[in-house]
Length: 362
Image 1 (cartoon, rainbow, N blue to C red):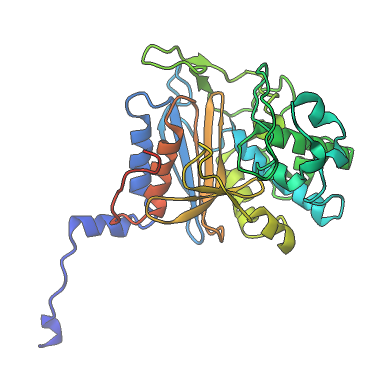
Image 2: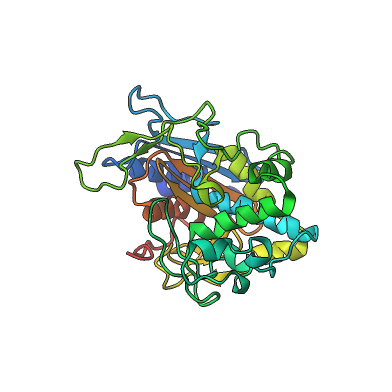
């Protein structure tokens, strides 16, 4: 057959769209729009970074329910439990310097503190590592709640804010400095994270920022929405008190995944995980020392973390090499946290042609 008679395959509309959407941007935007459909929240942002290509930024909904202002790049927001990844990094940097070890007991650094506040606890049997991977046996607790008795350390994964607030206290005892200053000195300043910080009591979120909204635990269609932007969340501290931006979280996560913040031995410690199965926590995850892995429905495993706190939900995950990372934030706290972010991350990290089985846990 003559060369000029070779049939040229005709590009179908679907194939054409796939070719233009190699980064999954169209699917990501659709997931953002769906997350806000039916009152799922005030607004949501997502920033995707793939090595070698410009960042992609998408939004849906609003930053301010009064003015209708849209969400935009550069906004500060509360990151909740993503704070734990920063604290875990500081602890492991101290271990690399020989200041402490993951096998040190909590009693070594905080004698009597745990026993004073938690019935049945014995800090001589709890290591720093067990604080960081939530196998300390210490219960979760919120301010004003009665604290349950401790369990046997090492027995199972129990996600607990107490673990990380104790870890933050150990940082301060070991360094003679504040946790906020250590995060600034060791992570934020070297990585030029200009929008990332741990506020003190009464500190407000720096501008620019989206308003943060909460239903304060109420459920049902008639639940009132409250503006909690100025609320004092200093109680969350080392367990969930930090503020950041999408671009800062990208820089932090990609550096952490690539080994830019820890020597090899401590990097291995951070990414050595325990099972979370049966704990009632996020499905299909394994927890390391401040970070966790999560397996998507298509079988892809991502690394990073998420955070849920009054008025804000945040997720930052990427591949193990740190070459593809996605950060998202929702400025409300009544959305279905696990499903919303699973849909968003699967839009980028699962093939468009893959089947869409029921989401884990549903």
